[in-house]
Image 1 (cartoon, rainbow, N blue to C red):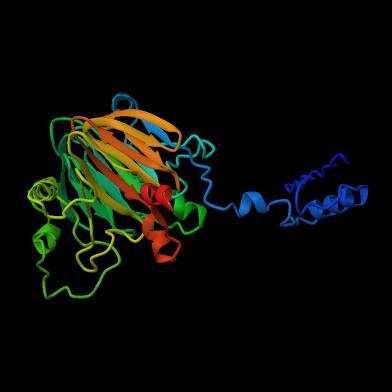
Image 2: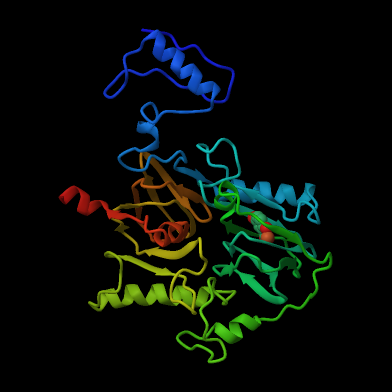
Length: 376
Ligand code: GTQ
Ligand code: FE2
């Protein structure tokens, strides 16, 4: 067997045995060195990695515990100022398969953000689409294009790319919440734009309801002044009372014999854009799932990656070959095409976000229920 002679350049071509591989001769080794120095790579040595039969995620299944996140966010609250330059006191999940970058998945950013009483996070805007989800607490208003929106436990707050936004804590207590953005997706594809806003957060108003909710927050009712579709939801807060009632009603309807749940004991809703009926953000899908006590979801997999957070209750999660016990606030990642199974003895509420709209838009979405696969 000829040993590889390596060039100093960034391209490395391995001689390989196996079907479709050329005989390892000195002439071949010489040709591979020429490829390397001219920055060329043949398909035949790479095809197994580049074109696997089904997606092999580099991202790993991983779980982060809320009590640790919350504790360290509080320490950052004492040590790290929030202001122009750093912009946000946000601490991101770094997937162990993604080289230490602050990427929860290849496309999604997930972070815990923390604001002390009286603090302002300065106004900026960026091409990245974003949302906030509140696990606990209240007292912060996020001001989106000048519209102050209160944040409370269970609320989901989408924010379209390129909208101006700052946050301020108008309460007497610190508040932590979860941010989700498509930062890794826009970073990997060189699509990122960013702009600073005015240094002052323009308003310190704390209205109970935002302008966006007064215009858009009436289920099934669309203002005739706003009939054009918009790519991201104009509704800036999806309140917990509504999400909770929808999930409660699905389970109650199931008891009455109506087909209302995804599978027995598993209620689920998707947050949608009222101008289109589809996903709230162009790149991010957001859903809420409720497992009734004693429910086990049968398992599924899909193209694209998800981040889940436990909103309430406890359960057991199986992603690929990983198993975790999870409880309130814990976050976990489901990489592309890895199987997910959920079960809960006493009931569990889960918020989920994913990059699925990207793949569906490009006609690359695939979804498989594991039950079908084993029957086929
Ligand atoms: O709150 O504006 O976690 O711009 C990352 C980037 C939060 C925000 C993050 C951001 C924000
Ligand atoms: Fe931002």
